[in-house]
Amino acid sequence: MADTRKGRKMKHIISALVQNKPGVLAHVAGMFAARAFNIDSLAVGRTDDPQMSRMTIVVIGDDKVVEQVRKQLAKIVDVVKIQDFSGKEVIARDLMLICVHLPPEKRSEILALAELFKAEVVDIGQKVVMIEFAGPEEKIEAFIEACRPYGIKNMVRTGTIAMAKFNQANGSESQ
Image 1 (cartoon, rainbow, N blue to C red):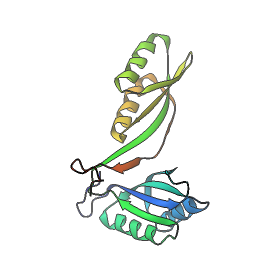
Image 2: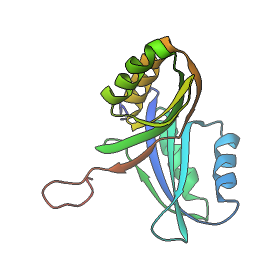
Image 3: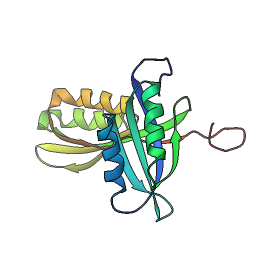
């Protein structure tokens, strides 16, 4: 996902395993704000260990910025482990709920569009349909553009979540 050419600002995905306790997110966000790092997205969720949460942070910047982000995250006591996905093969996904106007004459078109993108209709009313779509950011953007002509009433998205792909030879995470 990240371009390693020096000086070029790109999106970099960083995963941080953190202690699951109050104030950790504020501490991390404060570190980003104090150093004027740009967060493109931030997703936080529980892990299989109730004592830990995983933060997936998408940072925009060159390699120097990403290196500074990693160093500053490592200084935070509640951060247990940092993984930079730069140069690694990852599976990255976003989740979106989108409400699209649903005129009766366009109903079958809009439902076919959702099916084409493998999105799921989660609620339907007389004038609007709510569709859930999970996938890579590029596909979400394409789905949004496909929905625009019908009229987007409302939309909400999560931040990116990501994991390193498995090495096919031995089943371990790719390095």
